[in-house]
Amino acid sequence: MVEEFVVAEECTPCSTFQAKTTPECGSTGYVEKITCSLSKRNGFKRQVLCRSALMEQHLFWKFEGTVIGVALVFACLVIIRQRQLDRRALEKVRKQIESI
Image 1 (cartoon, one colour):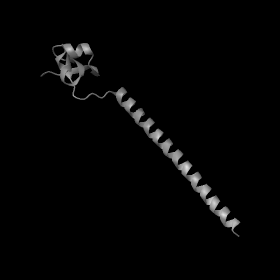
Image 2 (cartoon, helix red, strand yellow; image 1 turned 90 degrees about the vertical axis):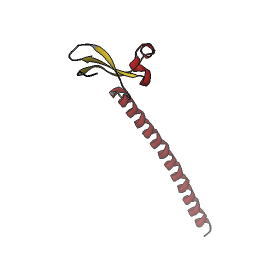
Image 3 (spheres, helix red, strand yellow; image 1 turned 120 degrees about the vertical axis):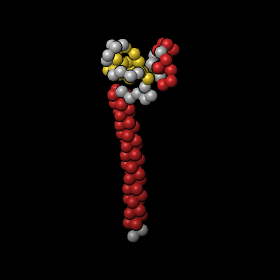
Image 4 (cartoon, one colour; image 1 turned 45 degrees about the vertical axis):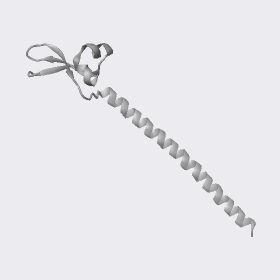
C-alpha cells in the first residue's frame, strides 16, 4: 500500500477462479499484477477500468467497420435516388417532346 511498485502484468480481466479467490477481483473484475520494489512481493492491484492496447485496437476497427458500413449504405441510397430522379427527368422531357 505504501511502497513503490512495478507493474508485472498489465490490467486483465479476472478468471472465474481468480474472481472467487482474489478479493481484488470482487468489485470490478479487473486486476493488475504488481511487484513491490522494496519487499519484492508479488500482489494484485484492483483496477476500476481496464483498457488494454489490444482492446482499444479492437474497438477502433469495430468503429471503423461500422462507419464504412453506414457510408456504403448511404452511398447506395444516394445512387438509387439519383437514378429515380434521372428517370423522372427523362420521362418529363419525353412527355414534353411528345406533346409538340
